[in-house]
Length: 222
Length: 289
Image (cartoon, rainbow over all chains, first blue to last red; front, side, top):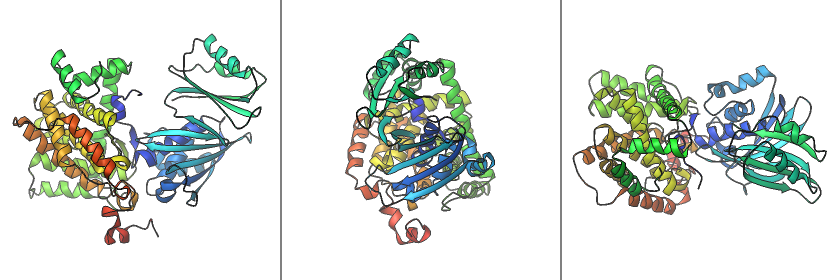
């Protein structure tokens, strides 16, 4: 069982009204924007289940938009995130999908596009109490919570890549807490997610990227 | 230093001769690997947010996002100023601050989920009312918040604090149990009396369903936060008077969880039963249409 902190009980500090529909939503999109190089040009949100039904009254839309601009769950700017996005020239849309029901009740798909024209789609689930899970990146099933510092590597599914990544980490004395590899099919694109106990140094990104079989490296940490 | 249940917590209090609050604070420093000053600083910020969230709607009422609540705290406050109050000063203030906090929450203000957003009014409601009524210092209230967290942690670890899993008894019920325990420690009660108070609250709120109108954290949530502080005061008073409880806290947490899981899905935050499906509630909200 993971450690339950005093501030998991007396917290999170958050913009209301709902830890799952507001704080959790902000956290999912906060994690999502960490996975793509900024600044973003466009973010489109597809809402499922209870998110689709009650997103307006819970401010889920403002929270998602705030998170995508890097606001944390207790950032008062979440209330005005529509205006702030307009000022930044960030285009956005919200589309409720009430047809698909075989899905976690608080799910959102976030389609992002940055100014370089790169696109990324992330699916997140809000689990309650502000806790969240990222379950899909670019239609590949993954699983991570953002509670640990994580490095996400997009690479070719070929021998030696994982060994290369772990060597880069061990060379910098980084202790791996969890590590998982996800792929769609053999030899295609794979995602390796490594979670670590401590804070990750930014300089691991260029080091890992040196390998020609590695396409993208991202650090996601609070 | 760690504890898995109330029994182990009480044994630690006895062994170290420390109150619940201090055991919980030391646990955070040790297991959370966080320096004492940082832990204290974070809890000071928690209290600061609680004060703003509880006081602001009294000066400046706000309408909720869903439009179902807003202005209740101001009304209670004016009612007390006119000396028409029925409850007495402590309870009057406690329900005012509890409802105010939910007003702040429902209008996208900054709150502390304690333990959840829907039950965020109860712990600050009672703590801030006690601070004013008995002139407790901020340091004393901050210590009491650690005590409250210990009870919330036990419920999170051994049961649930999610309305969708255990109904309102898991949110408002646990928040009230936390507040009751903290109140007992503030008034000089023993660790065991703290757990008696928490146990009493869970008993008295057992089976409470989660049935938010329109699925929003507004109504009846705000009313139930007021009921929650009242329950906490009652239970704390009994414990401080030396009334023991037959059923210890660990067993009440377990039975709350068991009852919660037996609640039909309609009564666990789905807005498909209870208050949410009364004709008047359906008329007031337009989510389904």
